[in-house]
Length: 240
Image 1: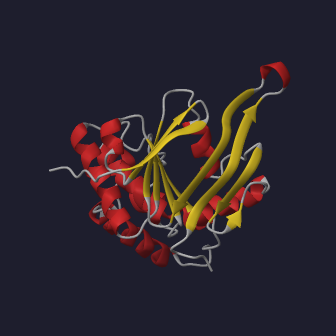
Image 2: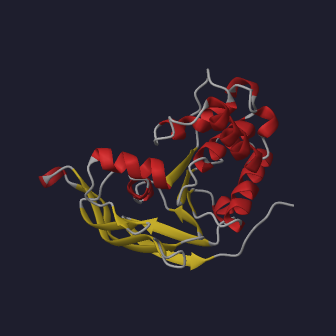
């Protein structure tokens, strides 16, 4: 059982090299990082800084070239692709800029998709639907459970995506530019929702290139040239 006061994400001397020989490119050059349970962290950096590579490794979508990555007490650095997929589904909830909802499915059916890949096939359809509605209720959207994505606004679609990220009670929520496709008002609503989830105990790591978006996090990490350039605690911004 994990130490809930301890380290959820522990990176030690993490490197990622693409290519080999004269064409090798070092995207990460020895990153050391700890994220404790219950933190809300924003990762920033210019294009080419390594933040997308770091996000892919944190999300178990890719493996480091060297160094170690311990997630929730488990060293995932050298796991096979199948094992990484299992870790992703059990421990990580993803929120993407583009929502990634299936257009022919209702909000509820989009939300339960992770359950179908995680050994919940034994559950009845009413049980799965009840879990989906409960997750949608957490994001203030339970009344839209039967709506398809094209019947929802951008902000509502992102709420569905967040409900989907929550459905497996993940150890970590990874949000990659979660407001990138939203207008100002919808962005503030999504950020306030993430803030409330954090207040409720969720651990969130969010990639953004916008300083005003990063202000919603408690801690801001800047990457430059594949290394952590700064790591600062942050005040908390809330929309009015």
